Image (cartoon, rainbow, N blue to C red):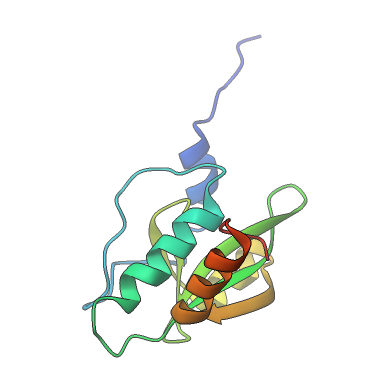
Amino acid sequence: MKKIIIEPEIMLTEELKLCEIECPDGYKPGDGKLHLHDCFKTAWNYAIDISMLGTTINARLVHGKINVYADIDHAWVELDDEVVFDGVLQRFYKKDCYYRIKKAKKLAEWSAVNANENFARFKHYGPW
């Protein structure tokens, strides 16, 4: 019997297909690459980058759990309380849909300033 191999990006993005949105105006687009096992770093980087654009976008770094066969630690960025940027996938999603599909549980959140302070204090991207 022939094994079917599914690429990680297809597996991770397919379930979120209905939630995905284009990069909103004024936001920094993702880099288009898959960053497996780098959620804390990519989310931190995105929150810091957005804060440096000098816009009124409210970016909040979130640490929590999502379900990928089991609950796992994960980080993402919430933008203007309506959009999620997932740094692993480098894509944007409607927040309510992302939470529902990924069974996301927010455990903590920080402004970019506070996230930067935590990085300086703990010397890593999280979880904190």
